Image (cartoon, rainbow, N blue to C red; front, side, top):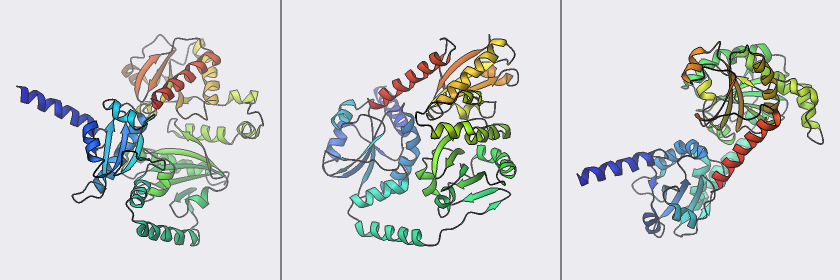
Length: 399
């Protein structure tokens, strides 16, 4: 019986560990202290609840598959800081994930570059002393950079972007870009709408609609921090302005484009004091969610959702307030303000136990219901509530 219980316990630990890279070596304090003196280690210090850690986990597992081979020169490892608190504290871990390289010493060098297979691999090869191989790779990159820049061409208003033409293409003007993978079901369902959007608004040149296949162009997707598919981003003159997290219907895309190209938004960007023009409050900042995109839209960070029947007078008064709040949080992609019309999405509201009375305001965090909002329904009160959540999360990440 004791052996059975021990097996179940070890299995539970293994399953929990697998969540952040099944092929990475899981270190306890004793195992780490023993290994660091005789092996070179590349270690991720993480917390199971950390959203950034969860997004890094598949990449970290892929890195472990690449390097944790029989005659390895470096070991890819991981440490659960909610369990090994003393070990993490000893190595100055203040936020998650923290990644460090240990070259036969206990001090370690903190990694602070891009979280991609390519960037991790380059960092490791340099630390292993394979400078010549790294220089040869850099030489090839320089030759590519000096080569004539490939020009992106459009078919029916849609630009197909690659590692070779991406930077030059987005350098000037407005760009609405879809980062996707061909095998992704959500991408496949959205593809006809994206093609239609390109035909409708991408042919006049004011806004260019593009797409990047991340299975073929990992460098571009990596430097833009793409962690899931599809990811939609807006760029102006080579700089990312905003992540798109709304519904994936034509009307919603068009509404987003209008807001990002409006005179009010341009005036806000150019103003000296950053004040929002009064008329900007009329822009549509709140997004409408449906059965199809609800789970995806609330899956990361914080989402404040208004459930309503779209009939009551109080609901109509609340929507402009939430619009204004949403516009104020445009520069903070960790916050999404959304609404669900329970008259149209009966099944969705039923599944969320949002059966009234309406309106109901609910806060979701990383896909789970966090709480019902019961405070004052004013711009100031809701803004204070959201700022408090972000500050609380920031403190958790720094622990």
